[in-house]
Length: 479
Image (tube, rainbow, N blue to C red; front, side):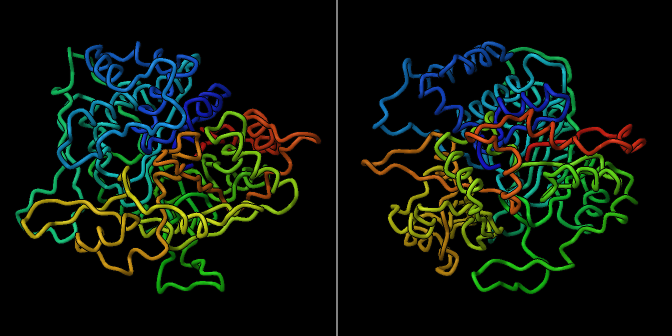
């Protein structure tokens, strides 16, 4: 669900109702810094910070970013420095505090589990971010958009406050180059703490091959899988085999992209099905197939508690109500080379038209790639940055075609658009293909529905499931 759409409010609402609420862990340092610059409406960030275990670090972060009463609307947000392989320290501290606060608030007021979802593609903030979430007692870590073989071992080490490392993919790296990211919790601790809960690790997969690889080669325990099909929102795994595209340029998926559920059951690990499972009959189907439950993103993304702005919710839900909602799979929008789902809102500019007007800039940098410079150092580049800059860093011209700045667009989705010389960043809404299935949630008048409405409908067809219900762990896991 992009950046902070599945925020602490939504995750709290879902967990409080007995299912597993999951916060998005993407760019939480940026989100937290902008909430503070907006004056911390409601005082929720202050409440989270007051419960952070290291008060000196908390004070540094608060003093650096908080603006009483909030910044002027026409002024730009101050940006944290982009993370690098080795820090910097102030960014890692911001990641620790931001992830702690998001998980703490999601778990506040109920005793039920909370999870957090990271993208393997975004490695640079990972170690500090995971530690912050674990300080808050996160119960599950979910990760996709890559092959997270080393994450289970990271969680093992962080749980006992021991140093953790994670390999950074560096294009052009040579033998002997140091490409390992390192994080030592005790360098950031202000006092000793008992061991932390080691969260269960759920790998997000799109193939049986990846599931088997995770079980056999991960450096720690894999506790289960989220099986995400190509109809799910956000980033999708590319189709297997030679790329084939339809008449509007969308990647075409085939039988090789369908996970074999009976074979997956042979691994004897719980799994949740995702991508088109946001309907009562699909929840029942999943449980009857042996799944522990389903992950649902689209239905929750447009509910009252989600982080999307009211403007974007209304625009999309109006299209849903009119039967005109449309989602395309953009094969080139994301700098990650993963296909990305985009909602086409009726009566507004397409993302292509929007990006023709947008100054091409990369100033958040979460989707940058690391590369080896001619001098042997590590540099960073993004296919969505200015073309001449990208080419000067050794990038290829063809890699820039059709790229969008997802980082800035997803921040705009949640009401935190950057302002540059009167240009205000525009959003880019993502959703699963089953967006039309939101119609049953819409009342006769208005466009308002809640997370409780989603759960009530999802669980309305479970009668008679017997043992499958007895073994049910979570029915709804917001993406």
